[in-house]
Length: 395
Image 1 (tube, rainbow, N blue to C red):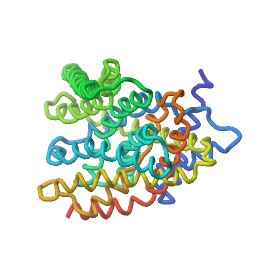
Image 2 (cartoon, helix red, strand yellow):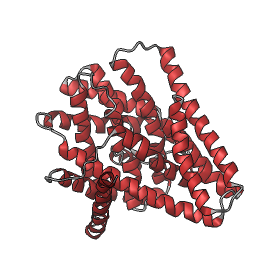
Image 3 (cartoon, rainbow, N blue to C red):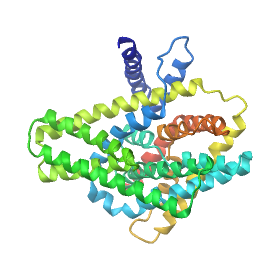
Image 4 (spheres, helix red, strand yellow):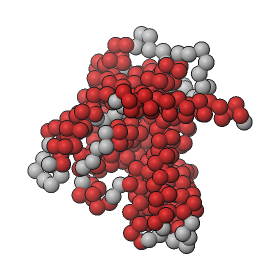
């Protein structure tokens, strides 16, 4: 038992030290953690913790998505909902297709490998995006759009990934089957999130014990996710739904006491810090162990393809809203493209590619390379752009 806890304690200590130095050096915390993780991987001894799909997808994503959704106000989201939904659905599909086509053309991957890589890279990662927004204290409409899109589009990407896996592994697919899978996943996710949120609200309304209220939100975060996944639905969408319902309805209806509200927010602030710290360190550790030899040209082409795919999602979708109240300015559109970071979600998806698929290794290696570029290069350079765009957007 002691030996299994020790690596996590070491990682938490490293994260705390990196946090201190990152603040003093004015370096993004997420970038510092990834670099520290790469450094740890190069040492003779390093924590024996593996970045797995189960850890990221089931362990880390639910609390991060729940906390962000809990803080997301429906009144603000409603005014931009059409734009956000289009970016998170049509935008993800456009990005996947453009990225896959470019990978097929640039490095001559087969269509199935290009498409699968495109789907893995299509969604911006909520972990990376939310960490960056909070580090710079971004507020306003653009920050809301970036945050909401990153929360919604990963659910779309997860559904598309399941369909793409069936395609590349030779499972018989029909348009009707794909449509049924898509709508069932969405419906089950929404229903699971609503049911769990309703149960939690009913119990929370009968107590003013802040510790029980904190425990109930934890149950909501993981319970909604696991319930939806158990019945073939989108766990991400379920957790998002539960978080938004609790965050908007509990204070409005008085189902969480004033002491409970403070306790819930401070507890989830710590949980978010803990999850972010661990996932970025683990990404760094995984990057340090990855073998990129012979893949430099492919990795460079992949970075170009992913950025082009993001542009193919943002500019056409924003053009549809150019004459309405959801209009997005040119500077904000450029920010959406460059600030669309990739991270833990892409790794969680790519690690789920079956071992028997012959193109698994190059897709995994290139995905790690793109994630490293996104977190370190884009993460370092997008902060000034985000600040400027948010200030412009606020005026």
